Image (cartoon, rainbow, N blue to C red):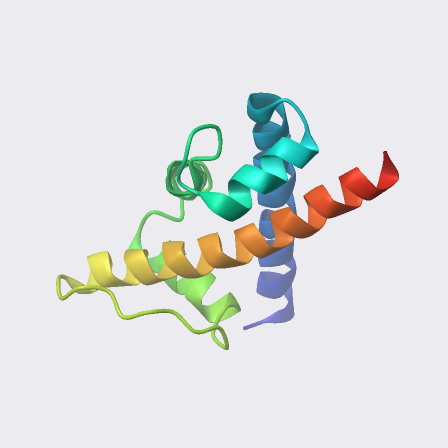
Length: 119
């Protein structure tokens, strides 16, 4: 991955973490509750991880083969489970969204822990 692409991905991830954490805190009435819900059920009420990632991919025009490859290239060293058989586009999208969601959860947990530590 070229350095400018790495920088773009890092900015995307930073913005995603900020937006995701902000929404969880608002929906869950505080960082402590948001962190607890994120850890117990990332698809549950107030968190909706997959919905967030889907919307993010649409907003940042990553919901296409080139966008999926951009994400996968940035996360090339991360493990991801194989998606079900399908079109190459669908498989790329599934892998990119899973890998991004996994990293987003890790970074969001870190952000929430920092917020809790500062209060």
